Image: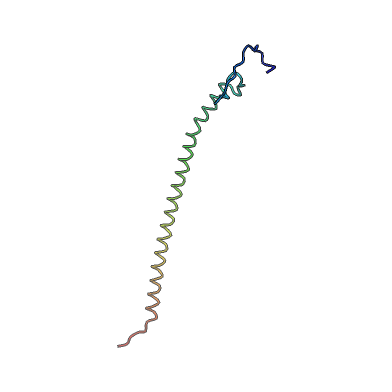
Length: 103
């Protein structure tokens, strides 16, 4: 290592089985401690914002389901009223078409 400033005094020959790439002596910091602290703080806030959003979406879905259930109930009631009206009309037509009996 020609640009390394230390004077070479000894050599140790090692057989490595594991190693750590995170040696702080040779790692250039990319972020200041303040930048990391701010990023972590914002990340910790995010789940609560997501939780709020999930709760809001759940509430909207519950409201839509309630609206859908109410609409279905109204349709069923209308269909039942139409069926009853059809029966009434059919009875009136049947009575109108009956021959009169003379005694």
